[in-house]
Image 1: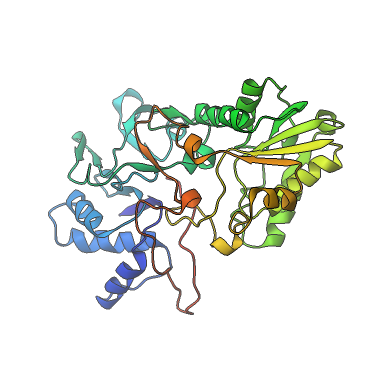
Image 2: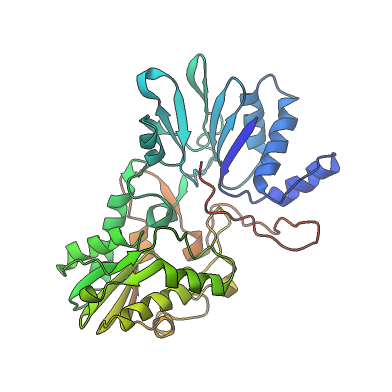
Length: 376
């Protein structure tokens, strides 16, 4: 059996202790290993693997999009809230099926998008074709993570019927309506700020420009472990284009501010390149709370928005003005998706109760289970 998991369980520590008491031996601290043990245990008590998946879903809580493979079946399952995306594709010439977190992955292998896996649904692909189990569907409100549209997903993906590129354009338009400013050029912070910057330019009438060149060999910086690593990566990751910003009033559009250090470095690059003014616009509300469902938003103590006003954050990052997207507008980025959204990292109100503890290794050292790069 093979298991792929995108998301985080909130009751993983409790389940792990129960499994260890029954003899299970864990090799790591991933909540995915908890799922694998539960599947194995339940398979011994049920007539087939899909029933074992259904029984496992009765026990696990939180965010999970799963793909499970046996020697005869490929199974997809999504948690009843539908926190993380999961979709179905049909391979060329009807030769089989594929499951992926994002539709762009189906495009890469020549598969045709069929539909999204519904929240709570179990989809089985085998020699008899495609079938589903929907006993867990409708047991909870559909609250997909809105940060998928803001940052995680690729712009060419379609999630719950909405193109991510279009959602980010809309975020930029909303930002221009909420936080207008007189400026000479609008630029985006690569990569997830580029589409929102284009939307801001379209709505405001300010010309759009390319303000940064990104080193494609540096990964996402906000998930890196130490402050020194993050600062060094930003220095290597971005280089300002002087001809675009010198002597100009610049609107810089970015997807988020987490700790603030990356933002301060990015704005400093524009200042060094000769920008006259830097007006910072963020296509998300302030991150004031941690995430427990797969987005690596750290402890509140590390979040710049916790304990600081917008004006104080503006001074700390070094911009001339700062504007965030409102909660009201972030919930309208994908109005055609017919689902609600989890905004817990902005509001502190979560669809599922947060965990009371984290997974521990044998040295009793706390280890976060968050892993934003777990994509299927």
